[in-house]
Length: 97
Image (cartoon, rainbow, N blue to C red; front, side, top):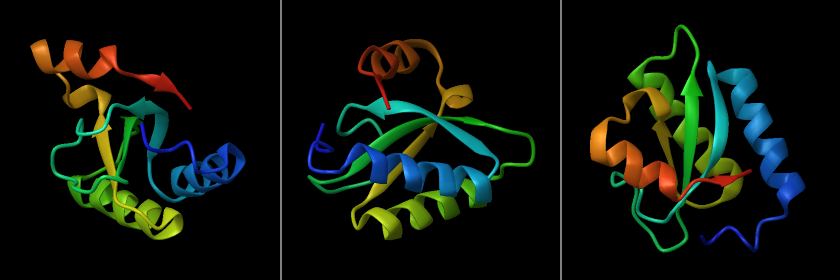
């Protein structure tokens, strides 16, 4: 995971700010490449739980907001959207925030 060079307090501050703006809660960090729609060696992949009212546009907005805050690509995967082998594979690499 390429988040070692981000201060944990700064990361948490940004995650909490995005959680206040969008109906989701970040659960953990995922292995690089887990969010296949996001590219870049410095991309951060996050697992989140959605709250009522979160749309696909909201997820994209949260990704864009967090990307701007962190200065690198961010991919968000929703726990509720994981099924079967993908769920097992992706959750096996989950790291706490």
